Length: 81
Image 1 (cartoon, rainbow, N blue to C red):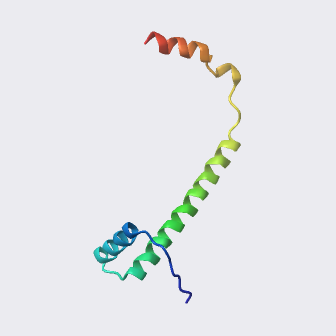
Image 2 (image 1 turned 60 degrees about the vertical axis):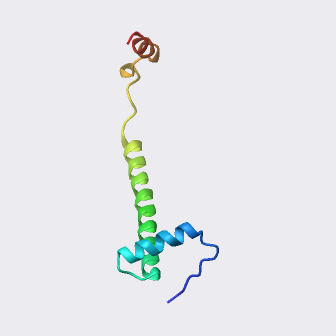
Image 3 (image 1 turned 30 degrees about the horizontal axis):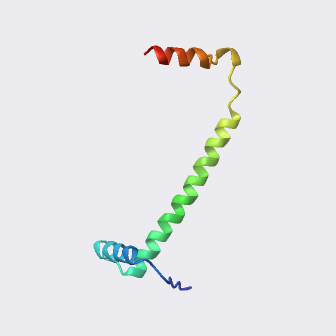
């Protein structure tokens, strides 16, 4: 199994890692692996979600220009409030 060495890790991050590992009853190495795995999964999930949203937007037909409100009217209405 590959190993990873991190140099110049800020002290505050190390302390947080130690505290988190202790609260989860894990070693620092185990907690680091768990946190890295979660972070990488979240990043992938975000990319997938963005891609799905973009695909839904592109599939949607363009709006009818006649149904789009005039921005000038909207601004005037907002100013009257």
